[in-house]
Amino acid sequence: MEFSLIARHFTRAAPGAVLGVGDDCALLAPTPGMQLAVSTDMLLEGRHFAPQDSPAGLGHKALAVNLSDLAAMGATPRWATLAIALPTEDDAWLTAFTRGFFRVAEQYGIELVGGDTTRGPLTLSVTVIGEVPPGEALRRDGARPGDDVWVSGVIGSAAAALAYRQGRLFMEQVDAARVLPALYLPTPRVELGLALRGLASAAIDISDGLLGDLGHILERSGVGATIEFAALPVLPVLHKYLHEDVARECVLAGGDDYELCFTAPAARRDAVLAAAQQSGVAATRIGRITAEAGLGVLDSDGKPMQIDKTGYDHFAA
Ligand code: ADP
Ligand code: MG
Image 1 (tube, rainbow, N blue to C red):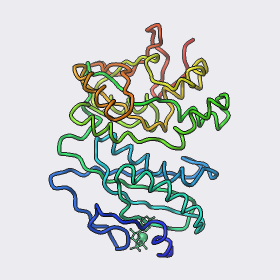
Image 2 (image 1 turned 135 degrees about the vertical axis):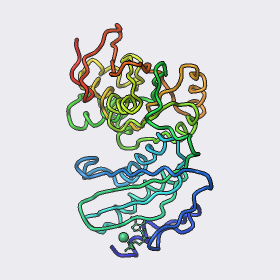
Image 3 (image 1 turned 90 degrees about the vertical axis):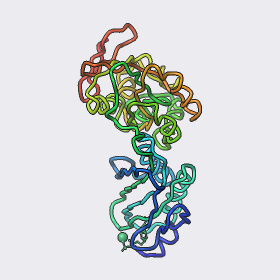
Image 4 (image 1 turned 45 degrees about the horizontal axis):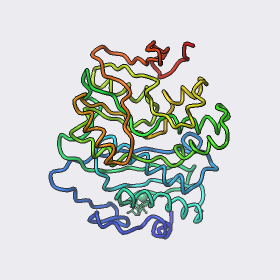
């Protein structure tokens, strides 16, 4: 693509880089002694977003979902690259897209230092680079029997918004308006991830649904867990739809919320709550890590709910 398009839309000052956009490579000087945390996430039209979605929202989401991976690792965001395929050179679209992208970038102190721009079906691929002190990253393999299982914020909102948009979940319009921002404007829990360094034994961000993502922690840690459905934090407007299978499925196995699911020793409960409060987000204890493998979900009577290993089957009445 034309260099002027890159200059117009993607070139910003990057004082945290030795050299940013404009040369063959960016040059980065990591803070001495820090480890780099690197992650890439792609968004494809038709799979992760719809053609009519707002470009500013897409700019926000493309970066936010990547920042969420840094958050889940307890890494400080530093630099990003953006590979973008565009069907046409649409200046208005790009102006809106970069407005959303750079607003999030400024908020979390991450700098765009390079990328690639090409013609093709709309595709967004962001790579983020963060820093973490050696040994302090929040990995998936550190959960131990007896640890508490926690989630940040509320879950199920993004999946409920998608189900509403697809006509699979009926909601009153005022209620739908409360869940839709979770789908279009996710908040990466960067501050919480940082505050959980040295506190959480394992962490993951919930991109594919609570059961599946917690399952990754269990598998990597060689443990199991029991969680309580009634303890799961859900927006009040979603509560009144939980008698519907689809809504319960959104909470247990819906994706796209980008909240953190993490484990911590039971002795650190107060410290976890203080870390969450300091980060401006709720943290809710939803269950416990067990020595026996497997993930069980208990209903409000303490009876096991029917769950299959892909996340969700259907629930016993
Ligand atoms: P090259 O042919 O060497 O790959 P490009 O013309 O693709 O160079 O890119 C020129 C410069 O612009 C490079 O520094 C590259 O990192 C940057 N760049 C290209 N596209 C983007 C983008 N979408 N976002 C940020 N930087 C970009
Ligand atoms: Mg290139």
